[in-house]
Amino acid sequence: MIITLNQQLENTQYAKISKIIDKCLKKLDVNTQIKRGRPLKYNDKQIISCLIYGIKNNIFSLRELEYKINQDIVFMTIIGIEKSPDYSTFSIRLGKIENLLYEAIYMILVYEINANFRLCSIDSTALRSSKFDKDAKVGRGTRLGMYKGYKLHLACTTDDLVIPLCFSMTTANVYDNQAKELLYETKKYNPFLILADAAYDDTEWFEICKKLEVNLLTDINMRRAKSIKSFNGHRYENAVFRKSVIGDTIYKKNRIKIEQLFSSLKGMYNLENPRLYGFKRYFRHVSWVLMCYLIDELIKKNEGINSRKYPWNI
Image 1: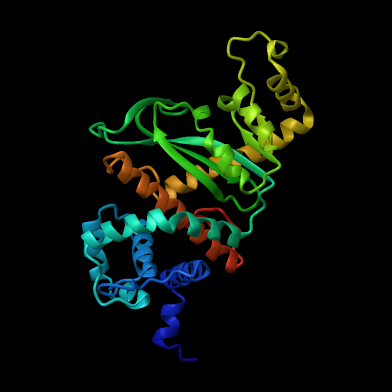
Image 2: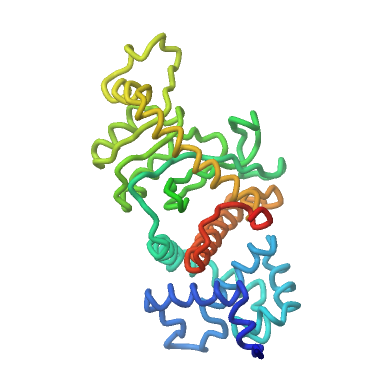
């Protein structure tokens, strides 16, 4: 059986990524050509594909990305370009894509994966930065102790498919329970129960969840209290349910999924990158890492792969 070059290219990971991006843009009915002035030399699909290429190949500079793409003839053939966009083109077009298209594409990918949204989890993870990063702040992490950098606050599903639903990024000195916007963002997916660790055992979080008609189950934060009897209404109800057999089973079985997600993002996608300077640049990296993860999960689902193991352990 003879396989043509076009057939070989269609089976590469970048061809699959390009098709998914194209499908998302078509759902948005995006017209990539401007009506006045010169026509765009590179469409949105090509720019986004190039960014995903950078994440896949651990490229963190737009100049380096331009250089590496110009050396990869196969990739340029797949996305239909003869020469890589220059770094200034990347910078201008990325700003527009992130402002206008990123959030919509992200939600399309989440719904295309079609994970179970009924049970979700919220947590944060430390993102260390260079000690010379002026935007970064000093904070305390569970495993790292004192560190300088940022925090990724994230909500995800806890089913067999662990999918990041929404996220925000702050400096490291921001405490976990200050990221209240995650509750409002997660409500868009209508979860039944949200799991969180003891850092989120906060009266205000329970009140917000009651208004949103969402259940919140957290680990117990004693905060110098001698017993849970000193807790007020919502925190007391949470503590009683958390200590029950069913509450303990639900929490321990599903709470670990978000930790596994953070491990995958840091291990396979270099989510934590101290080489990046400045909040804006770090946030851009984190955003596209999460986009890349969603695309990979959709490809795996389409191919019938349900393993979350590292590729070399499958």
